[in-house]
Amino acid sequence: MNRLPGYKRREAINAYIMLAPWIIGFIAFTAGPMIASIVISFMDWPLLQAPKWIGFENYKFMFKDELFWISLYNTIYYTVIGVPLRVIAALCVALAMNLKLRGISVYRTIYYVPSITPAVASSIMWLWIFNPDFGLANALLGYIGIHSRIRWIYDPALSKPSLILMSLWGIGGMMIILLAGLQGIPEQLYEAAELDGAGLWHKFWHITLPMLSPSIFFVTIMQVISSFQVFTQAYVMTRGGPANSTLFLVLYLYQNGFEFFRMGYASSLAWALFMFVLVLTILQFRGSRYWVFYEGELRG
Amino acid sequence: MTMMNVKENRKIREIIWKTIAYIVITGFGVLLIIPFFWAVSTSLKPAGQEFTYPPKWIPEPFMWENYRIALTLLPFATFLKNTLIITILATIGSVLTASLAGYAFARLQFPGKNFLFMLCLSTMMLPYVVTLIPTFILFRWLGWVDTLYPLIVPSWFGGGAFFIFLCRQFFMTLPLDYDDAAKIDGANEWYIYSRIIMPLSQPVVITMLIFNFVNHWNDFMGPLVYLHSMEKRTIAIGLRTFLTSMTERSDWNYLMAASVATTIPILVAFFVAQKYFIRGVVMSGLAGR
Image: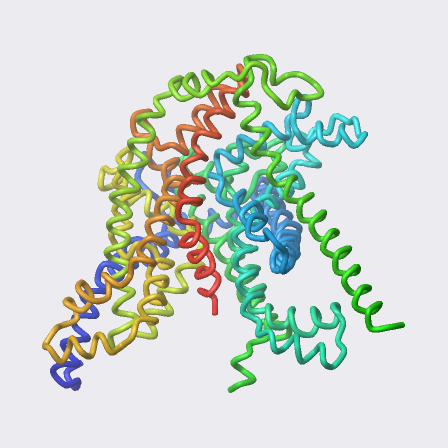
């Protein structure tokens, strides 16, 4: 700092003052709590009593805790089945919304709007839709001749697929991001390919997909992260049931922290979750080398 | 085959192809909209009419009363007041501190700039539950549990990494000549930020206002953890409370009325400021590049 000339030093000092709120916030609400979270995860801390250092006991308990494994399984299920379905659906919708059709902007609005419905309101709506006796889902199936009393979220075998089906309703945000990516692909690439006699499939496979891969990669990363933190739907609609079939990691963490007041165990669950998300994200970045195409790398 | 025929063939093929496209996107579009119709239709039914099979799509008679009843069974006016207090105070802090940080990242030179910016971006990917428990203990120690502070104060410290990123990207598109001209006249960074950059930044400020509104209106985990007594609750938590108080009676018409009523402000915000809304979503897609 002292080696900088006067006016530059003043600029740097002003920059730090402008960044001060964020830096203080980062320390107080992000970095500090993250470190505290590790420390607390080695403690037995029933909120109303004094914390006690217990070493690795929380992690040992987690290893034997059947509910932890169930919640981990449910979360992985929701992610591994749900994320690819949502990304592929969003990609298909984005491709359709990129067609040059009259009135397409009305369709874009229709496909986007469900994604901004408040989570609690949409959870209550879907609770009613999935009602086995009077719900819309079974009524619609009835119209096409399937008169069965499917129990949707009330059936342990169908509860997770039902929540995944519901999540497909909210892919609008991803659709917008992918649509913006599609619109950023230079028209000349398609024109050049057409001169070479390329068909629709060929153009999709050799131009659209590679050019869009950075956007697809980004939405997939963010989807995995948010999918691992699925909470509101399960908390409002099923409270983890039936038979723990929708007990997801964050729901189990919430129960431990704010219903059983086990701050230590909840923190170790938080760190377990963080490690899973971190490893998954790193693996995806590693894997991206083989399929994500950055134009800038070719242009140098 | 003559030229005419080839042309006509192409035209027919295009018409067929477009018709199929319209049928498919309309079909799925209807499927996406039906849940809304269903919710609105249920919300207007007289008690008991929601339990007919096959369902009646048009209520008979229309019970607009349901909305008044649903929204007064619990103190939704108080929930609304709390939500607005949180939203307004948090949004002011967020716009102010995020734009300051965004300005520094976009326009100023200082040691450690790239490192700090990467740090800021990386927090966007951090699962919020990692910090949930210690932050709760911190606010509890401050005596702030069951007050609105935990939902407002953090916004005054940077306002969220995404908003900083949003501001930075926007400020980078403004010509640097403005800054240089002001500097020649002896203006410092604070003057340039408040008198030149911010007045030109209406679009990004509007985007931030909308995103803040939607985030606070929809936030569930935060109010769930911090707000306990009835008179402190927000709309989202209040709606959940309404659900638990209703399920035994299963008054689905009131439940749907409350759900629809709390969705409408978000839809209005979207339709009023669609352009800024979409731009914000598109920008969120650039954050990863």
